[in-house]
Image 1 (cartoon, rainbow over the protein chains, first blue to last red):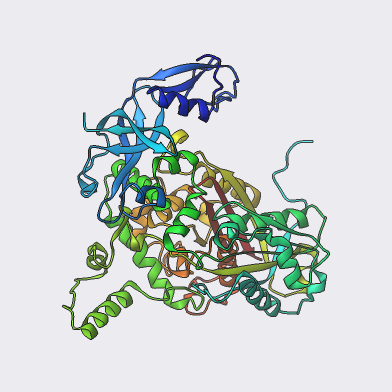
Image 2 (tube, rainbow over the protein chains, first blue to last red):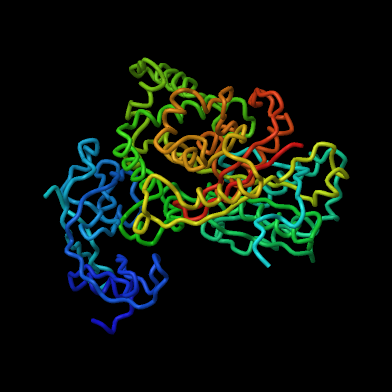
Length: 139
Length: 421
């Protein structure tokens, strides 16, 4: 694990292993998700891996009715919208992700502050399974 | 030597051109740019010989994707007979041509050139709406795209953060849409030169003609609440919260300050300009503000020695209704959390103390993304020369106007202040 570079590719590989892995700056302790090779707080370049628990809360969201082609392929459209949002994890970092378990047709009922837990969504990309990070709530 | 934060010499705008914006499938970007260029040449009060142009800077976001043609610089040089002199294309999503303006200014300020054409263009009508949405999403952050965000979705997400932080709801957005559409009929270049009342009446008329039940709305807000004419795109962004897909081009003629009077007795001078960058959601500290806008504004205010109170009117990048509210706070016209009140109280109307988007904004004027930055500055130039007709800002001694251009989901922003002396 320690040999992997602190970048998006490693982040995605860890997701495939059902782990939410980010970086922690050796110098100032700032956390980053996805991991970064350069700390944006102190510009330090020595990083350690850190695993996030996947608990957090919803801080902003939308229910998308006009879907991009990749989501239309999954069956989403004006009649079947889906929710995406920004989640603040307990450790303090933010993640942008699909939000599942909430009624996308009643977005006015979805509350900012709702507690969420990480879910790993799997889909086929060609012959490979690709895992993406999602969050489910309320918990 | 320490950083000066100032230009080595002054720059003036002495001519401008803007096409009618809309969807023009049977024309292309050369047609649009030629139209804007000819209007610009004819607008120079004392005349201008295009042979004098030292260089051209043009902004274009993604004709590469929209019309499968890249490398637009030499196409424009060819069009204008500018060969073999230099032409440079700039790209920063919806802020592409604001960067062309900036490069033109820097080239003159450095002493390299005296006379520069800056402009921008985009053709979006040759693709389907879904394809355009996909093309625009290329300018969002890769993490947002991977999670399934669309452009309207990113702004919708910001809107929910704003609502929750300040205890407001979707109703505050209606005031932005109604205000912008009230300016639109006075802009002959606008894609939708209609008020919201005009849209309501057109819909009623259509129902009457078809023999369908005629809808009844109490007022404009009642119409905007109705999901039939105003369906959700990415809640809480509905159709009337979103700018349209557009074609068009714009250009301005920039010259060194010391030769400006050769072209006109009424040059409009650059007072200050700034540019900044932002993180997207995954690393953003404040979801209801853009550090790019704040940084660009700080640079422009410092360069000009002006403050937000000195700005008499401004174009701001209202790609979505919520964006206008956030920008007028980031630019310092209103305190954080108070932009929506300013709009609700009518302070940003054409006859208000700080008119915002006198052109009708991107929402009504149209948003050919690569043309927008210069099209906004064209509006400021027209207003400062008192040539805006019925949408002229009704202020005595109109002297200082500004334009805020915003690329992608906020990754690049510029703020430019022009002044009449």
